[in-house]
Length: 152
Image (cartoon, rainbow, N blue to C red; front, side, top):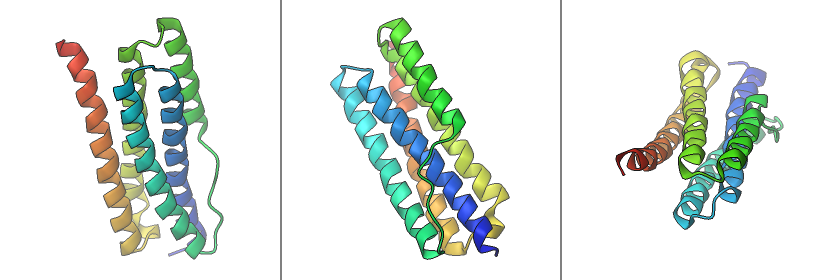
């Protein structure tokens, strides 16, 4: 197991969590609805916890944890800002954007477990699998709120 590759893999997950944190902070600013603000705070907490665990692993390996976001994450936030501005902070549009962001986070985690597991210890794989389940639960919460709008 090459240490530098492991650090790169872990940093890719830190980046997606940074994207989620910034995305949900942006989403929280785009709404005045308290239930959405509470949801976004919960989703941010999930990412902060995941990020903290990942940073600990990178540090343990002697690496430096990334502090940036992905270009795709920046596009997600910009897109959400534009859409929210055009639609007057429409709840459906905000949840659409969040659902898109959640699917990208799940996809990133699944790709790491599928394609990069040989660079991870079994302990790191378990940690990442547990984080993926938390992110999937967050994704399901967003989907459920979105579906409630469609039914109403």
